[in-house]
Image (cartoon, rainbow over all chains, first blue to last red; front, side, top):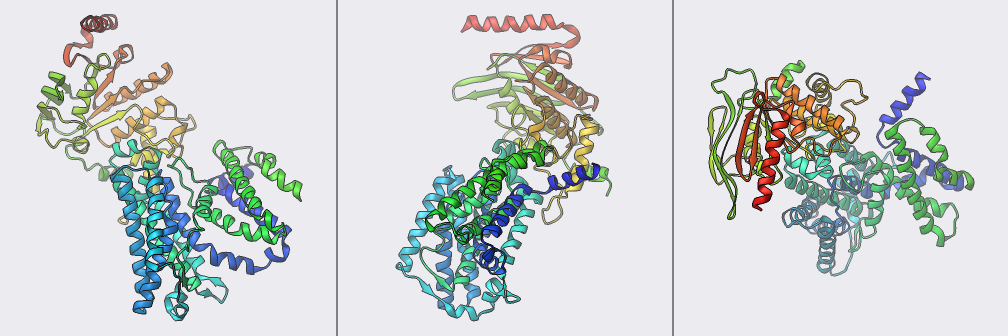
Length: 345
Length: 277
């Protein structure tokens, strides 16, 4: 009994355990409904090559949401920075220069978001919806609506470094994205900067009274988010060896969904970076999983939506038990979502 | 590094330390403070002082000027005229601020904005004054160890199932004030200002807060306790200052007045005020 309790305490101390369980459940479900696909490594390699930009953005967005703000402008950061990267590479022949310019421009866009939000006191949801249109529009305008193909970039070391295949199979961008995520975890949970973010999202007045510079910290968070947008953009453009004006436009909802599925509180003051990691992989594998499960094409989105809602519900249900501790297994067994899966089987 | 050394290292505040040689009798003196908001005069020639290791009850009706006076002494607002002395030293009011107040060892505990609710206790203790390595990463174990010491030794939290890893939301209102007071004491505040710390608390919680205030006294520090419920503060204060319509109306040492007399005195002021209006 003592050992069981110890084990339980250990699991409770793990951040985001509920969402890891949800991820495992979904994976097992897919393995049973589509064994031909989900018991072979190819699908995983495919997910690991497409999900990393989402993960980088999601990890950054976790910080923004924890600080009590939101950034919806990253789809256009992906487009604009992709254009900067592709064009600068085309002009100078140096992908490194393109990369540096892309993250600098991304950081600048984030900085502008932060300044508008804090100095003009405009809610960030409005600021970033606005800047999303602005930078997206500017991209289309400057690129003349045309995409830019850069297949030769595959010859360069930067391509191998960021999007090569380690050991011939593992996409390098997955390693980079997980690395960035781990860094952000430490930033949020172990660094003064992260602690300030937590308190600002929790209660701005408390943070201010205790000597935290609320405005500057928020600007820094937005700037960092923009920088990560630039990085994600380079990962995407390198992987595709192509820039197109609407790249990133499909990223908005999956990234936001990944953060919330991961258990980060919409009200701020609480951020789950590990949750976002698993949330991203849930979102990233859903579409493929649902399609491979052989449910009719028309059902894909509906099923995806249901699973997303179910994940969030289950995460919340499991998380509550974590707080009050005890009755964990009971909650899991009686959870509506788990029951639903059992019936399906 | 021992815990004590860490505590010392973090207490770099100028003039901090309760046990230093003193050349002053009052921690704080305010002379002829006047405050105008536009044309409205909020304070008229207020003289106010707090002695070393003295608990002063600042009482008065809502809108009497208590909070204006407190905002001036904690550096939130600048008075129109007047002089401020901290430990006998004249402080230029022009560049006096909240940061300066902290620097001089004056800490304020507010009813509702002292702690981050969703955050764990140890983070709350060190917000704004974290112990870090040179890259800014927090030394969690050291912070937790000191937070544990503050909880057990400074404010006397025992048992009750609350640890430094508990979030503030699990604490009762009284316990929250205790944490905020403990934090102020740890960071060597000489003067702790409590701004209506018992508003919206049950009687039992009020008692807890009062016990924390007794600890302030035992530790040799001074305290300004702002309240309009006189019965709460009568027990713990050494002196009462009644503020009415922007003036210091009366002052009493506790030994010279009973709770009943003080209550009546305050009621008289309230009635007089009603007649004027």
